[in-house]
Every structure is written in structure tokens, then in C-alpha cells.
Image 1 (tube, rainbow, N blue to C red):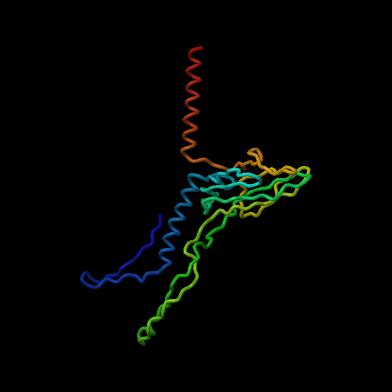
Image 2 (cartoon, rainbow, N blue to C red):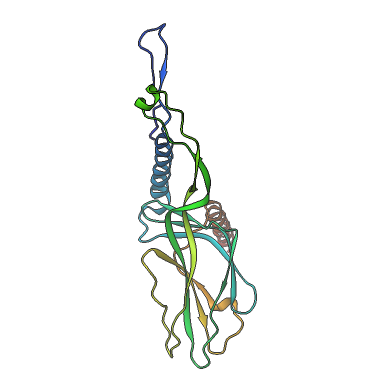
Length: 232
């Protein structure tokens, strides 16, 4: 784990102490160190050996018609250890109307945006006087506002790719910076989605608690079968 070193200088035991001038880059560097450590942990314990990115969350609900409500949390973990999250509490996806004669396949993807600017707002900045300006007695510069982001997000943004109606429809292509979450079968003249129309891609993972619970239930069934076999 790396740390940013904030130094102070003291030439003699009783001499004045000198601290570093605050540099915003030091704070950014500390955040990058923490993010690199988190990526390494995710890569070592979660995505190590995975052939592609893994998905958790993005729970969905059919809300009538050709609409799907997707709720957070939603996470994407890449093989490198980078993580992307759904930043909205929920997103409503509305699919295009069905074709009159042919079926199609739509795919819903998570677009992976890296360090996307967020919380854009006017923030006060002040130009710093040079040493020569200070020695010349120049007055400090007044604060000036600039419209700047307050945060940078690794976010997963939901995107719909509409397929082409056909006798044997196929999933439409999607860009390399997107990860498929599920596809939707849209039959001809269809106006209402059913649960069977929405199919997950096989890249989903469960929480550690869910896995442990399923293992415990599986062990219980094995124990019950062994006890039953002993009485036969």
C-alpha cells in the first residue's frame, strides 16, 4: 500500500519548522494509490482468471409494455480489477415497438465510462502570485469562478441496442467499451414483455454471502441423503 509523504523540515532541534506548500496533486495521488490497491484486491480475489468482465446487481423489473426498470446497485468488474458502478438509483428502459411481421433481439449493455466528470459546478480559484510579484508588493489576485467537475466517476451507463427484425434474428453488435447484461426477445406485434423474454448473459456473479448460503444448503442436502442411505 502506497502513501503520500507530507514532509516538514527542521534544521536544528530548536529551529523553526517548515512544512510543504499544499499541492492538490498530492491529494489526487493518495486517491490513485488507494484505487490501485482496491483494483489489485479485486483482481486477486474476484476477477483473477476470469476471461471477461463480471457483473453483479442491475436487478430488473418489468413495468408494463416494452419497458424495463433496472435498479442499483449495479457493478461491473473487469479482469484488470477496475470497477464501474451504476450511478443512478434506477433507470427505465423503453424498447422500440415490435415489427409487424418479424421478430428481433435487442441487447442491453453497460457502457463503461472511465473517470467521467461529475457534479459540474462553479468553483472559486485564485491565481497565485509569483515570488517577484510578492517582493514587488503586488496585491493578491481576486478569486475567479470556473465551471469544473467536483468528482470523477467510473460509471456503468445502460444502453439499448435495437436488433434488426428477421426470420432468424441475431443479437446486434455493440462497441468494445460496452458489456452485455441481458438480451430481450421481441416477437412480431408484441406489446407486453414477459419474464421469459429477458435472458441474462452468463457473466453474472453472486455475493459471497449468497454463495456460502447455497453451499450450506447443498451440504445439508448431502447430509440428509447420507443419513437416508444409512437406514436402507
